[in-house]
Image 1 (spheres, rainbow, N blue to C red):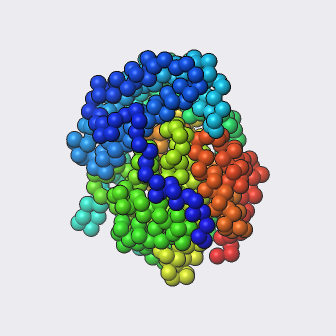
Image 2 (cartoon, rainbow, N blue to C red):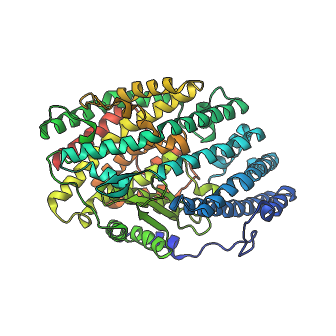
Length: 578
């Protein structure tokens, strides 16, 4: 497919020259940036042209600050043991961000008070107005130090997780690398590494429990200060969730329980029978169920990236060019190593427009899928780089994850680049589709757990443990036997960094997974049309609401039980055909 050459300009065109922040500006302390905030705050605005010029200048300031913080975060997560990097990131959080928050609210108030603000009619103006006004509604100056403390505690969590290692065959290895061993065909080896992983997590479980208890207390106080009954309701407002409610989320949980969990039961029973086990244990869930060795998708981080570029290029040349442009700028850090923060991310860089992808790859198929996922986010960042305001480049999570999860599925037709053996390719596709189905119960579990946590903010650690066990039990397979490992299961939630770092950012994965399946279904029927709709939807950025973006992508924003069942039947049928 060679169409969509019009998108190449997003790569080839240089970044817009600054007109408000001087070239070469360096941010070392708050006083460096203070004059620009004061200039915006004190500027006289007399007409709509003046409003738009003010918005462009503010956007330039926002972009500079966001990219400065981005690089501090990237360098800190690349090596959590680098004291200077940690200090630079912490300094921004503690000495710059609190001042920025206060001024941002003052600027929001100034903008909202202008008679011409309601008359702005460019694409995205109404979305901008709604978000400015909700930010004004929830802002409380007394919450600024609490938010700083929350960010510091989230950073502490990241450092603890990043430092976790286990000893394996005379060598210290990272947790992601240890996780790969759970795919071993040697059951005793799987059992041994599972217990080592869990015992290592257990060492820090009380410390992480305390950090989380502190976070819950701080977050609850923020919500009370802002006039909300709980942090859940505060976050729905803060995240701009204008298209659905907490009640809708709970309906999603129930729909997953009734339509998806029975499929998980089938998977588990099939796995138990094929492995010929008396009991399916938690260390039996990653091994290939026919007893074959784990799929190895690549040799190292560079091999992962080069093959990823080929996959994207074969899907469409523009997509491959996105990754190539990022590689040229050195915007990848993919391999797992001691001291790296956990997880993976695509971090947008507003000024240059070319994001940074961070991963903890260890050669597994799952890591390959992660690159497809983060690559989808990267394409999203690049096709929005010339939107006029920084605000428009930062979409809602439901839209952001549609970009990434759709890319996982559309790219499957080209996974032969990683798996030239046809049988291994079939296995890879089947394993991923099983993971797609498996994602929904885990999303429902984490989201339901968060609802419980913040509806009951004064809970004890024991009550939290019991709530976790009850909620996770609702969405788990009854076939898996955890006897002997109950203690490990009780703190399994601690590995989910979203709970610590980005609360309530998780239900989006479920909604976007459903949207992505629908995008993939369209792609199988008409590849060029579906890919065109996908790129058109992504290029809207945050100038449109969630429903409009999904409609532009050719799908519905619908997480009803009937839609979930229809899409699950489609995925199941695709698996049957492999």
